Image (cartoon, rainbow, N blue to C red; front, side):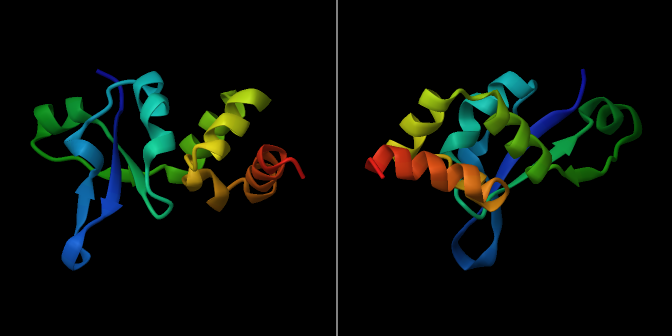
Length: 109
């Protein structure tokens, strides 16, 4: 199994919790859910095969990389639709100019 991903969001009391408790075993599944993540969410990548084999593994913060990749796969209409619905705020952290442009188009500016 290749790398798996979790979207981690701040929770009550300063803890971090997986969004909806999900583990995404492919980027396609991750990308379908990434627009629903909180603005301050983090995406971590974990090698579950290594965990099973060695009983331990490291997790890597891949938030910026996967957010930019996911955003770049969207066409203009999809970006504007997310903006219209108030989604994919996570993208504003890494592609702020493009995210702002999608919001302006949505507002008719």
